[in-house]
Structures are given as structure tokens and as C-alpha cells.
Image (tube, rainbow, N blue to C red; front, top):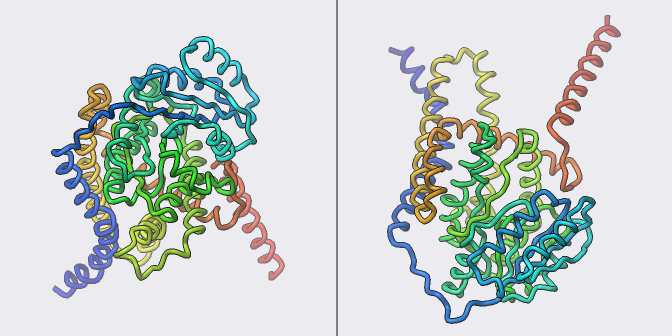
Length: 444
């Protein structure tokens, strides 16, 4: 009896304590959010068409974009928004390929568009800042040059602005292009698609409703011109310029930032794990830089009042326990913890994560009701919920590395690829091993 009591209270109690972290911090809030989204979607807001549609400016930073730029411009041309009310400004920040020739070709093909190109200093923030001064639209919309707009995206974005005068900025919904996934799909790419769908159509939906959006997507975002021109513009000293702009508008200017869930921008799927490694480290660096800039406004005692404090702790601090679980599993085996008991604990957590992903999956299906083609494709990806917890765990590890690198190395757009860092780590271990071996020989 004492043996089973010891096993249950002390050993299982230890693992139940660890299990409480993901259950309380991630799983329960996700379940609550999923049901809130489903309830809200039962009563969608009706959008009214304004008597006169406003002029809009679409800004596209261009850097070596010759392969994707034409399709990006074409998607604007094919938009349902009146072409005579669209100004398109390409901000070429020192491209070395044939991007200019693509622009010249697009000018000939789409002669009915107000399309122009300017040359700027290198850098996305520099390009956007320069383009802002030439924008004439009531609303300014930024999109990346390596994606395409859904035909109703611009119209839906403007309608949300026109029907909600409190909102100063909006982010669109980003999804990898399903046609490319059908042709060159991989487990990594399908998990990325699943992640984007849930992040924008589930996670950011709740954030937007509470005016707690952490960052607007740099790939597709929009502003009232008077709001963005009152800001400090895009920060050229951080690689998280989109997050910084979000903080400026909501934290400094005290204005509303939201999500336009039915405005889609389709990007190219990620190529491989190495590209994911660089991308997520870059995102993490940007977040850390912006949080550091605004950290004086945050106090830990405001955990329950200030969503930014909660986000900081949950999204960054709890990365460490996730990694500790993995290390602790190996160490505790030497303390005679039962592998079966530990395996069961991990299995329970894994099944809970799958349950949450399936709930989010249902929410996304409901929110894709207006887009039958996308909904049909997404419906077939239910199986990704089984692998998605592992994908999230890998991304958490990359983000943790990004945090460490942001504290130990100089900021820059391009981080070191995984192969380079792996080689450096192995060299350090090899040199330490040799040094210890030489010390042993000296002592002998």
C-alpha cells in the first residue's frame, strides 16, 4: 500500500504538476477561445457599402522579386476593387535581379493601373517609409512581393475600415498557396499551412476582438493614412518593424488594431526546415527587440490586467519549461522514475493538444464558409492535427534559440543557418573534449 501511495503522490504528483503548465496556460484558454469564436461566428456583422469608395494606396517593397512580382501585381489588377481607385507603389530597395524589367512588363500589360516604381535604400522598413510619402490613398495597404491577393481581399479590407471608424489599422489573413501545396506538398509544408490557418483565423481573431493583437502581419496589413503618418513610421533599427508599428498604434497612440479575417493573402509555402529555422529566429528576434523597447511600460504585477504581460510570460518565459520537459525525461530515468509512467504522462498531454487542435480546426472551417475552395482544401487536412504538436515543439525550440541568439549576437535580417550553428556547436564540443583529455594526460 505504501509503495502505491508513494508512486501516486510523489511520482505521479510530480508529473501532474508539470502537466498543469500546458493545461492551464495553453489548453484551457484555447478551448475557451474556440467556443467563443464559434458563438461569435453565429452572429456575423453585416457590412454596408459606402456611397463612395475611397482611394487606396498599395505599397509593395521589392528586393530581388523577379520570380513572383508579376503575379503579385496581377492579383491587384484582378481584384474586385475599382482599378481607378488603386494606386500601386513598388519600392525597390536595391534589387540586383530583373525586378525592374518585370515592373516595365507589368506597366505594358496592366496599362489601366496607376502603377509606379521608386528606388530606396536597402531594407524593408526603409522601402516602406519612402513609399509612404508618395501614397495618396485614404487607406494604405502593404503587401509583400512574394504573394498574391484573394480577389475580394482589398474590398473586404476597405469595407471593414468603413464600417468601424474606431479601427486605425488592420492585418489580413495569411495562408500558404494551396496550389503549390498540391504540387509540392510535404509534411513540413502542410503543418505550416495548418499553423497559419489556426493562427490567423482562430488565435488572432480572439486577440483582435479584445484589441490585444500582438503584431500585424508584415506580409499584408493596412492603415488609415492619418494614423500611420502620425506614427514614427517603420523602425529601421529592428527586424520586427511590423510588430513595432503595431505597438506604436495601440500602445503609444492608444488606437485600435484589428484583424480582417476575410481578406486573404496567399504566400509561397516554406521550402525546408533550414528556412523555417531562419524565419522563426528572425521573428523571435524582432519580438524580443520590440518588447525590450516597450518593456518600461510593463510591470509583472499587472499579469491579470495587462495582456502584454501575460503574452510576455506565456509566449516567451514558458518556452523554457517546454525544453526542460525533454531534458528532465532523460535525467529522471537515472532516478528510477518509471519509463511507462513518464510515457503515459506525455501521451496524456499529447492527446490534449490534439483535442485543442481539432477544436481550432472546426473553428477555422466555420470561418472559411465564405471561401468554398479554401474550405474544401482545409477540410482534407484534418490529419495534420496528429503531427501538429510535434511541429509546435520544434518551433518552440527554434524560438528559444532565437531568444538566446538575440541576447548574444548582433541583430540582423539574416541569422546563421542551422548547418552552420550545428558545425560550430560540434567544434566547441570537440575542442572541449580535446582540452579535457590533454588535462588528464598532464595530471597523469
